[in-house]
Image (cartoon, rainbow, N blue to C red; front, side, top):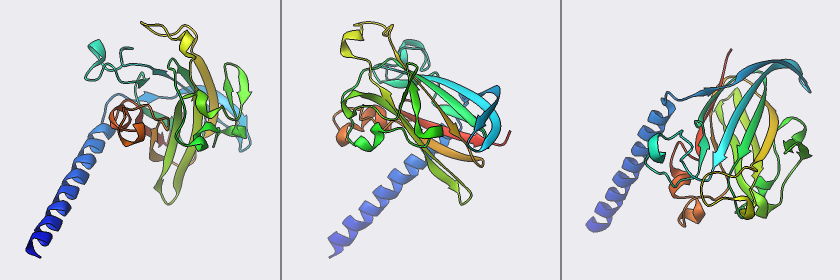
Length: 229
């Protein structure tokens, strides 16, 4: 019995240590000075009336050599990544048009829920200029998925699949000259702090391919902060 109690107590301590470590890491990531703020672009007519309009332009890369992680790709040069940073700031009660240029290839999603465009204005996005509502499960390279409830008065969810670049268009060195460009608009509500992540399993072989890069802040995840302007 004593051994069981000691073992259980040790498990609790280990679990608490892991949670504390995660909390410390997330807190430090929240304080990352590299934040990309949306750019003012006038106003936009939306289903919620005429709103202030802002734009945000980001990219996804098959490695970390684009420069956002420092010289020679930083600590993990082989990790796929978003760029130029992974912490974003957008105004509350506004229309935010986000453009994602994807330079990476892909395979299949673990969950085909994320093949569908969700939470955008009109439930659509444009892919290389053409309106889409979804893409095939086996053609997804990444997703841009924002989710969370900052408090009882502030919640936000949207998810957009990004089409993979065909393997034949992926060069052995550098980046493809034929990236897939996806643009969509979302409407923000009250100010709040949210997280975003990619729902395509682009990690290593652990945790259903959600290990390694997928569990490392600053590559396939980050913060999406809605602020009062």
